[in-house]
Image (cartoon, rainbow, N blue to C red; front, top):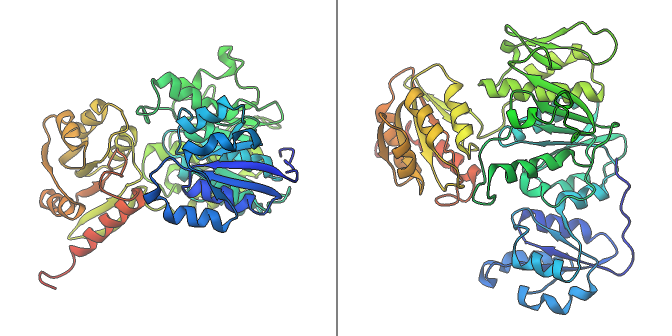
Length: 466
């Protein structure tokens, strides 16, 4: 639990960015005894609705060019995660010696409850939701928020010291933490992503490592021993970077892992008491497809065990977990063909994991707006695992060029993509939407992309001319 931040009368706070996170910060801060300002670098014509909401919360909108007039009065600025720390507005605040906090930092300072924070390139949302599910099954009062969809600052409002807050946090959000100190920090994996924002993988990894930067021996760190970058943080390798107590999960290294696979059994080696390994569940108990989800389950189990959940009740809790939307979710089976929505796959590593999750012929729909990552490894996986490829969006030609030897067509819409995929799919095959890219070239969001996929699949059942 953090030392709860108390606002003083007359403090003046600027919210930078009027997306979902920024508006949530305004909503919560409007309940405090502060003066609120808001700004956004988008053209005013695109901001009318957001500005109206900000004004309803009592904030005064200030155009970026006019911030110099109020900067000397500001107590701090709160940065939305979609706004890069290098933006002109942020640089102006630093130049005026105004402290710039992120939304999760502000949420942490307002939160009375202990926090579990989950980050990684892929699997964050599933693992965050799964941890919340396990803690509830063990009798804890839990709130789940952050990058998973509902801003963290709204979830911590009113949370008591006897509750737990489980937060999905992105690298963008971690860039702006200062005191943020989760009781349990979970680091799932670090693979190429967001290289349109970061200059290198090392820089991207550094942002992820910040999740444990302020932890101490009263906290827990849960890490993936199979990921080389994360494994380098292990105290066994002499790295003092993680000061928290360490718990490790692995599919490959039973000797050093706290939780690992023995055949098809997930084994736990207790860190206190009787050291003999305990079988918690089998792979068949996991209602999620893919080897990557076995690791996600291990991470969630370690978190629950660190908090004090008994191993005996966790098996049934895992079995009753329902997969999240747009993450390897079956939307229909038509004429023996299974249609799977993995629209939340926004990087090549997620596509590779999705392709490896199924032992059946796959017709892949992939593409969108690239985030600066290479498609070579994804192309090789497509070549090895897919029967055919239907590309969409801006990155379609680049993905097609990387997928050697696979029959490929390009579609101009999701409806066309599903129709073309159906042409390649026989009974027993899977049509898999796993884009490996951002959605914003063609869709409002990854959710919108998945919903359009489901609608196009549903239309396949409609009689012609209906």
